[in-house]
Length: 186
Image 1 (cartoon, rainbow, N blue to C red):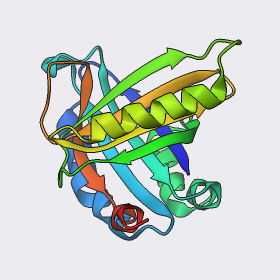
Image 2: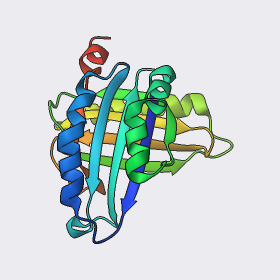
Image 3: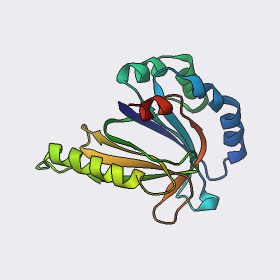
């Protein structure tokens, strides 16, 4: 599996209702995207405590081919036409742990560097155990840890059914999850 994300930073005075309208209009098309496990469309707003206004998409793809199909397709072309070509961050999925929550309203993110002497096998095992622990908590839909082998950093994204004060988070304005049920069945 492949984790990908791009973020569009927006001006402080950007009318965020335009982003919400865009999401309402376009996001349901993702509910049937081939190769997509889930896409969380998120909003960060300064008026709600974020460092800056932003609009982003976090993807969990079944494989790199599905992600590539999206990047060369009309959906991504529409992103480029509206916001310019974003920097797309990618991670190799080290852990995908699914919780029992049926919905999500918030996305938290934790990032840490992976040192040059790190035992990558042990790191992956540790992150898989941590993911299982997180997913077992009430109110968690999914927790995904990814390794960026270019920057050597590990990032964990967790989808919460309720906002928490434990860590910075973004509002999940829409969750498309066409491949989540199949992943639960594995």
